[in-house]
Length: 372
Image 1: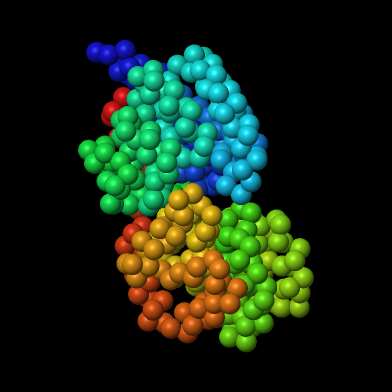
Image 2: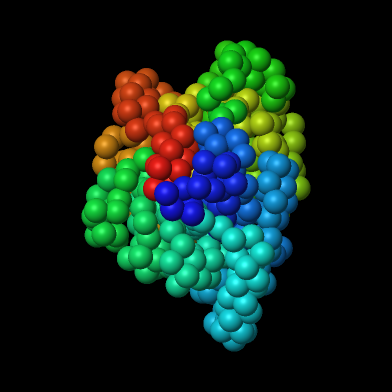
């Protein structure tokens, strides 16, 4: 029996989960960690993220320890800000070495985000088994590079052989927060939660934790059209646009403005239709809750993966899409048109529901535990 298997049988298995930066990386990582603990209660899990990023707050809130690296990603908008990147990358490798020496992991899981690269790269150089979860339908350059030496690669969608070795790929879908589909919240209860009136169709707009500029400006410009078409709006703005949205919605009882929605299960229960960016996490949740959605992909995402994500659903008639530069003029009219087309709503609900995967976290956890 190998030393690793001895440790597993004793319950002393140690695993590092690396990555973060956005909720789309962090929440699946936490779901995987919880699933591992469910299968192996004595497992010792340590997260490694980037100092100053949201994982440093969200991971401890979920009950896990985390170590922060002094690392930053490549800045596409300001090249001069990348001058210090080589120094930060070198420093992060030194920090990773210290973490590994103290923690002694038997496996490392990378969930994306620039903090995952030095952790998985170091693990591979030491012969430690590595696992990658690629949440998007277009893989990032770091994951493509790391995938060559990874033990297994979990993907959200099929057709990822163009990025990774075919024999290492396992299509699992994206892990989704349990509260999204475990609650039994009625639409009436959810509508009341947001202070809106029962009866009218409700649109939910979500643009990520910081909001989405094009979506927010489209709603602001066309705010009158919602009432004119008997629609209600739950508008998650992000903090930067919040005050401006409050001013735009003043006097409109059919508009509920939130800078951030913590209890997303209420928002999904209230919604008849959704406006959303097309990050992997948002898509995974929308497939579970089966909502007609109009995507507005963030055009500056790495490798334009949000457009690839949305297109994959549009091609299956499981969503509609408006490109970012057209959002101000075309988004709200497209939503209103969809609200009046019951047949199209039902078609999208049926097709997007076929893509929903509820147990991705358990599948991933089980495969990892069986491969170390």
